[in-house]
Image (cartoon, one colour):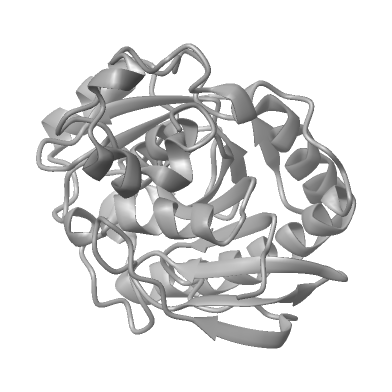
Length: 290
């Protein structure tokens, strides 16, 4: 199987990666089940990239149904060291307009029914998650966005609140989230960020604003057709941004701490970790637990 050091996870509206050539469709089984779809490994800007549609082609998976652990584990099996995650979001701030792009640097978890760790079942580990995105990767994404997207407002920083879904917020919830200082709202990226950190993969979110959440007085005038239009336009912007970022990352080594996230995180002594656990998590813990 061809290896790829850069992974792209596409969200709502981004089910394929334009410009991907010499494509190999890879079907991977993981200890956590099958990923959302086959992983497409192809060449983008002369770099091998692994692309995965988060909801599956045809958008068949609800946010709660997404096999997050399988998705990130599969990326690890492909050799991915950096994940660029594109995600449609609602805006919680007046200044974050539809069609704007946000690079959040924090997450707030409001999910209830999802596995967010590879660990347990005979092994305990606690990774540092104070800063949940890779600053170096965001630097590159911002550089690519400002160079390649004219007329699009780019915002660095802010908090992505991850809700369970699939229904959107009530007005009361939306107002509370605003009072907490949230920036954008979505249903998927928190689990990806946590699991990527455990897998020692750099992770960053490209948050693509489609509309205001229901706190906004103009929310009721938003139609499904308008949201779909924004999704399609955002997908084009995301593809341009990602291609630019991939070109900038070509051949660049990692100097961040993401690649050593587990060095001091595994609490269980190696002699207490079973052979079954070592095999199940081999792609993640193998370099620390022989």
